[in-house]
Image 1 (spheres, rainbow, N blue to C red):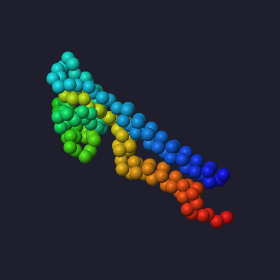
Image 2: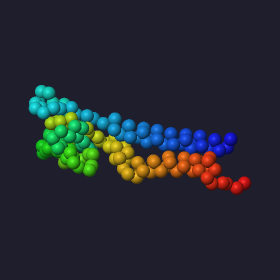
Image 3: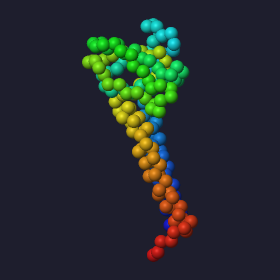
Length: 158
């Protein structure tokens, strides 16, 4: 009876840890701004993002042409192009610090995802190896120990 209870607790723990990681990853990936654009963008059909002057991360959703290029036009400051990581890059996003004061308008030549603030922090956390492998270890170790005890591979003396 006690063995089954410990096994069920361990399985419940795994479900809880996996669900927690899923919520973190889901919030980090789904709570972002997607700028939709196609080749041949004109001023009339461009989808815009208003950059409020905090750090942003840019990732290319389609990666059709190696990278996505975005035009940043500040309300006050120098106009620049920024790019997502290359298609063959090992990173999934490129981070940019503002070089202007105030806000800027961002338009891109392909569909991109822009993250900033708490969303960017959660995204970095969810993608970090420490969190991914740590979550797996935190979930698996109690389950393995419960299975070992449940099947009698290790006896605990009373």
